[in-house]
Length: 154
Image (tube, rainbow, N blue to C red; front, side, top):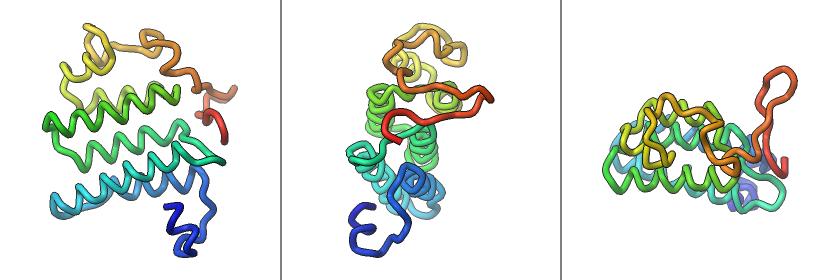
């Protein structure tokens, strides 16, 4: 995305919203398995670019968008589940695991995989934010009206 922006092909400023929009757009790709694989790879590359950007960083909408792309574009093979595990670990590193992300994961991932991901024996649908390590959610907070806010650099 940065390359397209630097070349002039993308005129919008590069901020977390443009990165999130690109990831969400990938999630709506239809067509062949090859087209879906390319769309997922684009979304994943966009996420990595956002994580390494100097002036912006992922927010509370980034990972739900990436999980949605995973849900729509990946199957449930062991290799594909490991890609989802990698995304979840990135989210944990960024301290952005929140209730929406948990709900999205629980809605489409196998229960045993969710238990492994969350490091719990609990029923995945019963896991709450307070059950998770503090560092996984260290950069989430809500404003007084209950809205979602972003983390670090935004």
